Image 1 (tube, rainbow, N blue to C red):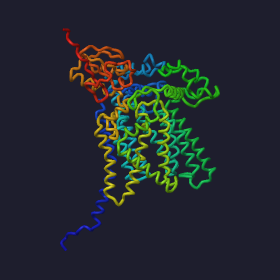
Image 2: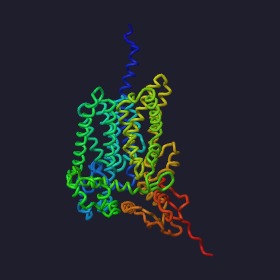
Image 3: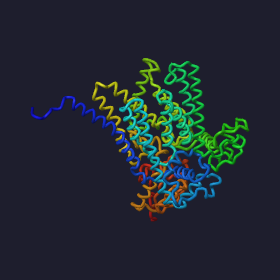
Image 4: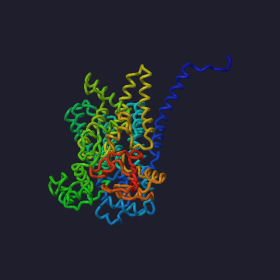
Length: 596
């Protein structure tokens, strides 16, 4: 005996398993921390986008005022959460003191608020962005937790990476809008529905599902699409006896489904009314149609008679009371009217007014990182093979729920005329990441004996982080390598990428290079206030303005690409002398030739 006991052969294996467990435990936290770092990277360098001031003002108004009259263009849930760090700060201007408060003119109320003290309002906006970042991290955390409960640790880590490092999700998680909240609440709805439908969620799954549906409908009007979508999926599962309905008689299946639909509907109404503070709810159809409409540009185009033309209420009995707030009902009619009229956008190299059916499929294809797209294609191939070789019963309830919800949401978006960028498809993005993670897990199992193939799969998922790093910090302009990055991407889309966030970069460039005299088209009043905050002298540049020889012209890419042909004739066909982040074009007007 030497006094030294050699370790048993099992010791290294046990140590390896222990290290693997610790890696699995720490990896989710490391990924979430990395995501928060990416979200904050340079966000203070981005000017307020076109929509953020209205969203922030709505959120502050929700905390200050007793009613929710400003929350018609968008429901207030996401705005109210974003405004938590700033709404009750000492010295805030009272939004109700604006002369436009009575008419609920959100654009004018927001302009009044920021003009009181623009530097303060700008700092508040940056603080509010931090709340959206936390919601983005919450989305990633929920995706990890949900995937882990259904498919295990490996799939959960893949899903977490595909969400946390997706440049498009990061981009939308940096701005005060309702798009990231819509993605979060949609994931909650579909996730909790899958728990309920599979029978694995316990007795509270019906309650959490109902609350999630209400939250989705209170974050963005597109959340209402989930009601019929879940209804269709629920009927299919009940008819085929899948999940919680397995082994039950047909009558009992549909009786249970109908009862639970009533409970979910009651939860939906309760949440919407609570978020709207039960303001002007329970009005009769007659009173709703007779009420003065908010001062909203969409109403102007319809002579302030929008509810009479675009609300389904006009077909109901006049004395019937509707258990929803007036502002919410007006908002749904306003979105319907806006969609009917179309919206000027840019797609496949040309300006469009009416939505293109291929817009959102193409945007999802080119704005998701390659790993997500390739795994989705592989997952679709695996699913088709299983369905053909066995039956649809070979697909799990949760895969059916997530896959069908994604497909039906996409089908509804494809019919829309509001092609305003990938942000309107945010509700689908986390669902696609979950499906891609499931495909990764299945492929990993199929290649159990082939280590190189598994390493390639792991590398594919890890490449999402590289996509994020290459896009940082200008995540809005991300396009994947399938279209050659920005080189090909901007030939397809520019609307959601040029969102006004690059005015600070333009001001910095103009100061550093003494760009004077400068003509600039700020496009809107809030953008003009932001530009003047930088104290860069400029002259307004309109559609037919003739700039002086020797001067400079700054135009947003979206402006020149969607303007009528009569506008900016002397600039058309010219390559910009300078491109600021690919979104603002600078043109040098040649000096006049000296007279002989």
